[in-house]
Image 1 (cartoon, rainbow, N blue to C red):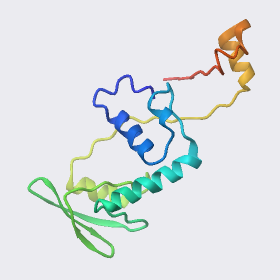
Image 2 (cartoon, one colour):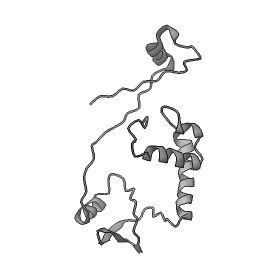
Image 3 (cartoon, rainbow, N blue to C red):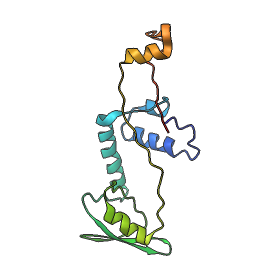
Image 4 (cartoon, helix red, strand yellow):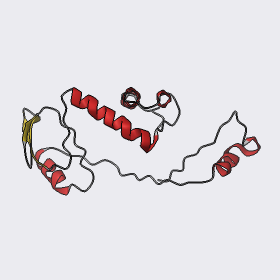
Length: 152
């Protein structure tokens, strides 16, 4: 994502938070920022620590059984083992939590988003550079070529 259409600046903010949490600074200005799984793991641990230091909590492997709405806002959540008063709720429930989606749908107006799938295709770098740069392939001023294949 080049962030060209990021009018709300959310993408920029996410990258800045990643840098604050240990990602390399260049992700804020390179064309296609990528930090890789190894770095991302530590960045996410640091972000989690920051959220906890600000009063946030994380509940892993715990089923959300109910959400209580008061004055058109989240007021309380019920899990299989606890009742928690909160006005902020972020769910990262994955795609197979059908029971949670059904419960949420009975309490809130849910809308679906368009579906997309990404597939990693690997080609030898030399082949890509030759296809993109022709006889200039290998010129150190150009660096490795990249490309994006999209089908709709």
